Length: 517
Ligand code: ADP
Ligand code: ZN
Image 1 (cartoon, rainbow, N blue to C red):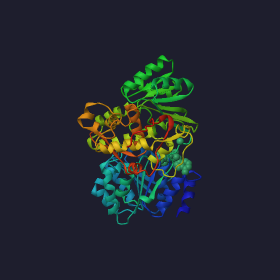
Image 2 (image 1 turned 180 degrees about the vertical axis):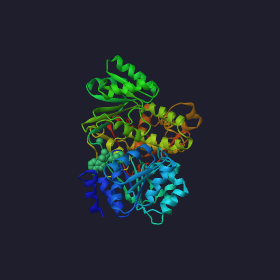
Image 3 (image 1 turned 90 degrees about the vertical axis):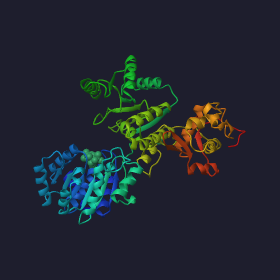
Image 4 (image 1 turned 60 degrees about the vertical axis):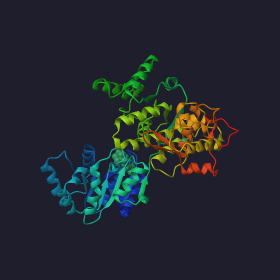
């Protein structure tokens, strides 16, 4: 059936070829396989169900939570001559009814519905009387509590699919699914995990870097001066940070604009316009800035602080280089930021989401500490597996040699185990460096054989080394009221001497000679 797909793509949409992921998804669907397709925004997900909808007999149901997008999509389809409509809460009862009558007569190739419709048993009865070959679930992460936008009504989808007399194929689509969310989608929608298609997250014109241990303000000012003629965005964590950086840059005579939710609507709109029209070269903003902004010549996106997760980071950083020209994405990292983000998550998240949010934050921290390719880290985070080092990022271009730190890693891990795997990074670093802190002595940790075995180093250095071991997945974190460390199975192999741990030289932990772990 796939041979019908390409001519349809050309005649209706005017495109000459499928993107790789589209072709895989369409083949899978036409082979009758339930499938999940993960592609970034703009990757071309809609084609993945619109073309099968044209190939297959009957009406394809598209479930989407975004009312305004539904209308846009339907308008586009109608323009190119594909019969389609939507039913959601923006319609009057009569209008919705009329459309359903038309749908029952098979007048549409695609019917878009809001998930809330599935709560009505009358609606489900109507669906039972239609010929439905395919159910496309857009924004499929909404089905998972682990996603960032859980919608209980999505939980009715599988019931609906199950109740139809002829079992339709299910195609789930999303732009942001971590492995955990994907597992959820697959199990709830009965998709075989082998039928997962993930593509298109790589942005070959972006080079990523993480900068640690520098005076951030100085770095920022130097960076902006060096790139004076270019447009760039500086993301800061809070409104206060934005205001401070804005003032500071103005003093440096940088042509700067600012944007955050604490400003008046008019002022905010004015600042945005100045940036969009190249009247200000730098925009300092909170994450409130950027949604729906179409400015293609942004040459750099610099994060002054750590964002709360990789999804936000990649979305914000990805605003650089839309025109395809080389652009930079720089993240300035300082370990205090993690505390700020933890605090913000604690304040703003619903109780049952905190755990998931903290895990995502930890992966963001891992990004800052990995010594592997940063672009690959991102692609792997989004689930792409067949990746290669990019050759452009700050890790790929780092030519310092790496040294063997296996022994130091063993010291840290054996200390974690001796402390009962119930404590956090700070206390562990204190024990290793032989701190006289009251808590250390009260808990009797000054009696451990690992007490003070790294005492020729600062607690900060050891703490960074622990972060490095976390990023290498040798030590893992249990997110409770306080995050606690434990040694992972991979870490246990290191303790047994099965593998080496290597780290770049200047980031190294000083050699310790006379103590055994
Ligand atoms: P998503 O839903 O993944 O965000 P869309 O389906 O809206 O993405 O598609 C994004 C853009 O890519 C659209 O402008 C669409 O016209 C274009 N596009 C999709 N598929 C192709 C293709 N095979 N060839 C060229 N352009 C395409
Ligand atoms: Zn790289």
